[in-house]
Image 1: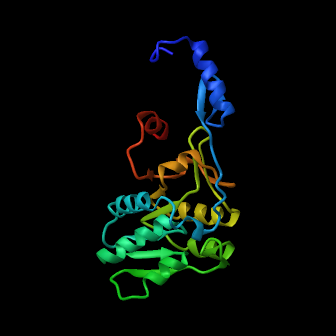
Image 2: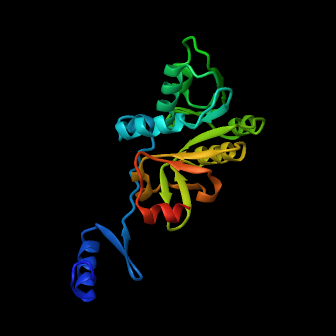
Image 3: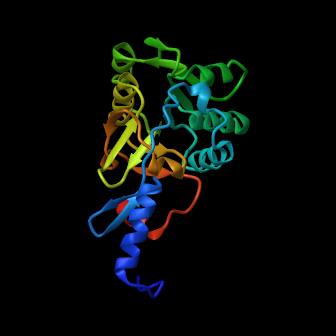
Length: 221
């Protein structure tokens, strides 16, 4: 109201109108962005979404790595981009993964050591999740892991994915990691999955494609 030099009642009316249009949700003292669930449960549906952003995120993620690291790349279209960059740069480290597309990428000769974890095959996720996969993960201690996420809810401090087994596997990866980073486009800050598997406190950090606004950064901190 101060910024536009109008009454607070005028702002309230505008917020009411915008809420009816589905642009935002009214809360006490103001409003928040509306959250969506796109229900893109299949990895194949997400490969082409935000492709440029994913490449930027992947490049930032690779800059966190050191030679000799043992890292986990879970089932994520961003992690596939991470794996491609590692392959192109031929960084001598060990990748542990449960994503089939990443495994297939390393059929060619490379300095990278690849360890693939099996379990229950989930066609929609393009990889293996579940009890057997989780039991194998427990045998490792990763220097660093990159975890793909579907939704990041700063207001409720929750991180979500689409499927329960995928979420439980992600949780095991986080527990087995010295450092665990969320990788996801900034659009994920306004999206939700169906299963909450972690909170912000479980992660070392969040890697996205751009600098976030000061308020969002402060909440994350």
